[in-house]
Image 1 (cartoon, helix red, strand yellow):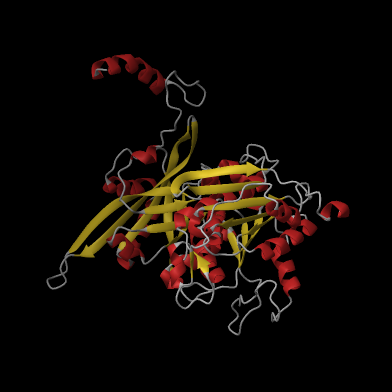
Image 2 (cartoon, rainbow, N blue to C red):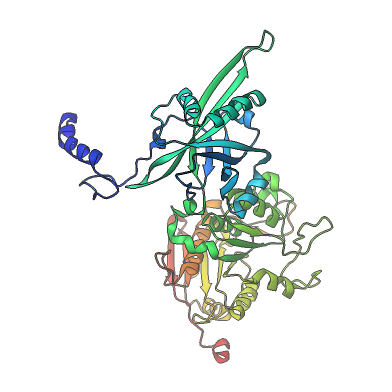
Length: 495
């Protein structure tokens, strides 16, 4: 293909596309169905951004106002090192708040961003985008469009060593659909040499706007929007549970209830989401902090355990253990209140049985999962709340009678790390995560059942994985099976 031929072939199409009304005209043959937002073509400062809810609309009659912005850290320092991040908390027009972020984002910002950096940033409306990358043109435009804002900025430059201003204008956000777009201006003055007479150096840059809201978050995972209303209780926060909880939060689950009595040991960081600095902390507390900092649309419940003397949750419960300092039934009732699914990653059959019985009584689906010694395989299973595929005793009887195949394992792959009172198994992070991946997929599928345009449903209840065969590594090989009530199980008589 020659460039000249390409131009000759496509020039008529380009001309037709350029002069057609994209809002009403059908797409031209071969045309990419993408928007052309003007703000995407500005030359902006690298590693700087203002996050803003893209669903916000400002009346075309509103020409200026203020944005309340919170920053990740000290503004002047962030500008100097070109690592600025601002989150727009609200938009005002003539002192009237038009929009503000929901409580989840407000709480997240006050916890994980710097509350001391909140600043009122002026904004102005442009009739059309400024067709220049020169920040000086933007600054001059402020004086032309809104002299009042220009005066405020000029006086502020005497108070601060930087100024910020936002510009909004209509731009295409989807083919033929226009909405408010944003670009920001940063100007800063610095002292070039403190030993000689003061010499000021001024510079200015354009900074992009990045959309951030629930709607923006779910654009790439739109078939999981129903998770925004779901609550999941996750039991066991080790190599399977911590990874699974992270993926569930990343998928936009509304609420996670975390349960684990153990603390973080340095040696478990080789296959969990914890880091060395979490050592000694309760797994529940460390994971809750991690998830809350990364995924603000998911609320992590950590206040169900009784408090210690400092008021923090004190997770010392060991389900089924005698001598517990508080009533385990009351605790379980609180954990399972309004839960839509139980995710049991304890890999303890006794706990599986206990939680499966509670799940059936409460009409809650349960998923339990386990890896195998040596990381050679794993199992994921689901019990439905109506008992249509049996109870945990049915599963146990089928397992004993080998109705379904067993995952391979290396019973010699045991280890007791120094300082640990229990024996554990050897397995790599990438092997155990194969089990967690399938369990999370099944959890999401279960929660989305019956929803339109949702994540696909699963027509199986149990999956067994093999990663090794005759001493050779396999790609993850799953076999799926249907669980059924066992003919010898008493649960059939109870029905």
